[in-house]
Image (cartoon, rainbow, N blue to C red; front, top):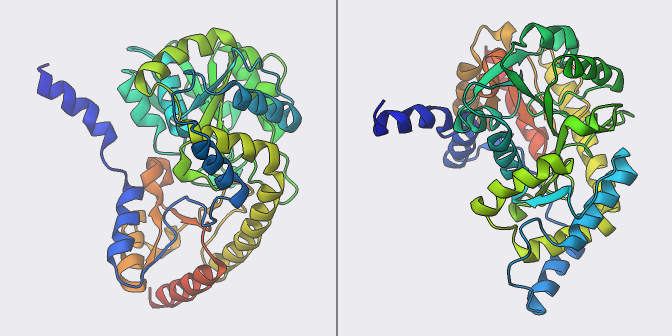
Length: 388
């Protein structure tokens, strides 16, 4: 295989995502309302912004150590202990990254190599497969189903495991479905993980955004799972800090000491003033999370009820800020539905197959926008559905 062919093979997996396509198109269609992008509509709370300003005013503009400010790593360790009963040494077992996406990239490129298989529940976030391909490994997609509320079932997972299986990604609360994993379901997954000696990468970026009395359980807190789990989280969703690009990895030292090698040569370190903002967010941002979560929950209930009134079936999502209704009854593919909805009703959503072939027949609607926008979008969608 020549140089150009090798580039083309890798690039095939990392083309511009369908999500970004619909986000961009929504900006070009005059008067369109976008439910396509998974980004909080809230501005980062003022006290967090002020912490970054203070750092700049005090001249905190140089590099930090590769792993991040020790003050931030200590706050992260304290947060994980008080919220999810996870214990990590901030000196050796916490690594600050440029968003959770970089955390996913460096983790998979450390763990996986040619010949390895990475188990990815589907539908799920679009970054896992490209990062696996870039690492030279193979993605194995494990289906989840609406009738199971899109949780990953242990018996289904086991069917996709081979002697080459090395890493399992656990992306819950889930993007795009909004699904959550009950503790009992995680315990069943843990049995499979132990049986086949898998390494687990958990993407818990939406861990604070759960509803209906659900309590998030971090997989690493289960008996015997801490030693084999890399926990990824960040500030983007919980604190409305998407543009700050601040995330982190929490894992035993036998993982972090190697992941840190890729991190240091890829990015050196997260931006210093952003790290100071992160310290403020974790120390004093609990009330911000509660306020935003309560508002998201109102929108969740409204949008779920509304799509059901349109005649679309939709399970109740209890995490993140997405609903994932089935559009199979319309007779349209996910892409056809999304394109027609955008151009005929001026509402942008994301076709479910953007998140893998098991997302076909669904669309993702993000309720990370104002209630005013949601009400107008629902009105337009109802008119659109009535014409089908």
